[in-house]
Image 1 (cartoon, rainbow, N blue to C red):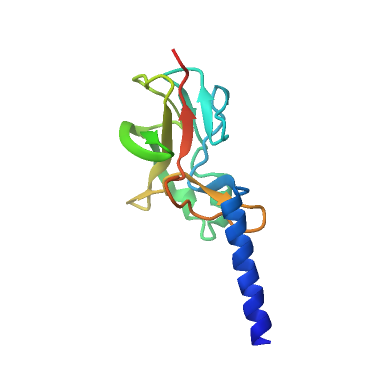
Image 2: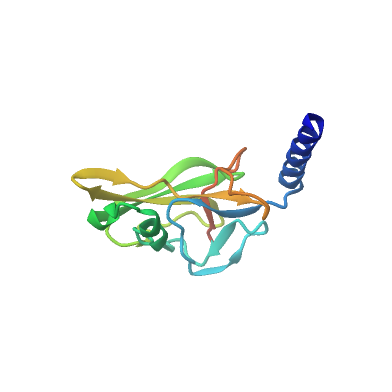
Length: 174
């Protein structure tokens, strides 16, 4: 029985390795607030970044607390959350790795923001958001939003390698 259990575990590990190597893993929301659709013109070739139609795109995301946050809040503490604001960060990217922080804002009162300064044309950027709020007199923050991977057979896994897991946007050519 021990030998068959080891073989079963080894088989599962092999399948997991094959699915990650073969590229059949799909990006899925893994943590934090999810971005809402941007005003865009399409997707990049690998479908990980939305191609936006402006160098000053309007970014939108879910409001906090989300229905799923309230659902898992057994003690009802989120009903006491006050002063919700949002933070956003945008990096220039190289091969899906954040290189340089090019834009950051905090204290945003709504889950939407139009960039105040333009981004460079024809460039890949990575971005993330989080909520900040007061709960019973203490400052709290959510996790920074990021994507994980799900191969339709298992849980969402944290990103690894050069892909940092942030949401991508590609600016238009000018």
